[in-house]
Image (cartoon, rainbow, N blue to C red; front, side):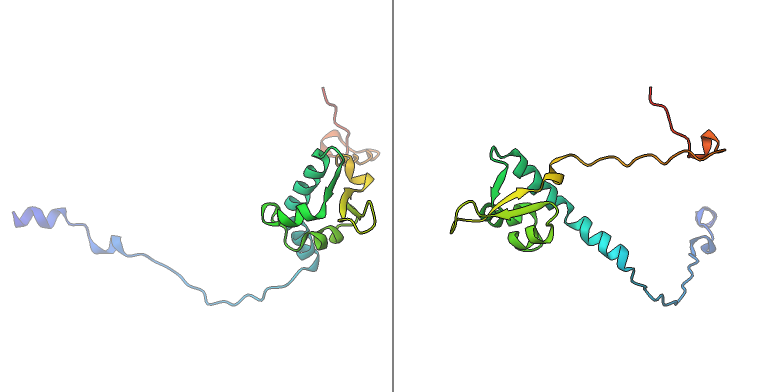
Length: 138
């Protein structure tokens, strides 16, 4: 019985794991353009949610107080008014009557859907597979 037990055991060297560790320090370099793009992207979902809500309203306006009350639902990073002030190209704040609550409206360019980028002009002598050619859609 002892003879069978010794045969079924695997050698110990198969169980050893080889690991390497490099103690290197990497200096992180900040990229201001990337930081700006990421900060704008963070606010894209709240911006689109508010834009959809404004467009779905019959008057195409939204009381600023409604956005302030629903701040957690829209995941606004700041107060509603500060968020509207941060994007003047999308939102316009106005008061329909003096001493009334501020209302928010979309600016005319933000009403239209985003336009696709135009294609690059084809360069003379460019082959169709080089990416410079206009593609046909069937």
